[in-house]
Image (cartoon, rainbow, N blue to C red; front, side):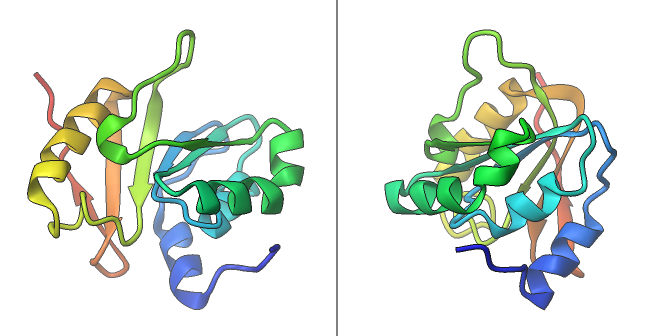
Length: 144
């Protein structure tokens, strides 16, 4: 599975404020198409793609083998509302999610928990984007 992004996903990736050194967290990566497209735009940056589905994570790992080998991508199985940084893991400065119910309003309680986890796993100036805008909309990362 080495598919290219659909026009919709390509527009979303194009809209992200990426820097060559960005540390990016994609929540709900599915088979990893967007995560690979982001990783391909980074020089020294890094993408962590997470999904609650074991099947999706396995697909993303297989399809992203080249980016993983290059050290620009990792994939982890975890739900947004359960995400925490691993010991020694650096925080992320950019987070995005496409069709993730916890962040698009379909599951408000899970969304509140996910936003708390995102705040704990990001830099103080991190930005969070979800689909549903033109093509993205920015959500506020809650800070204590």
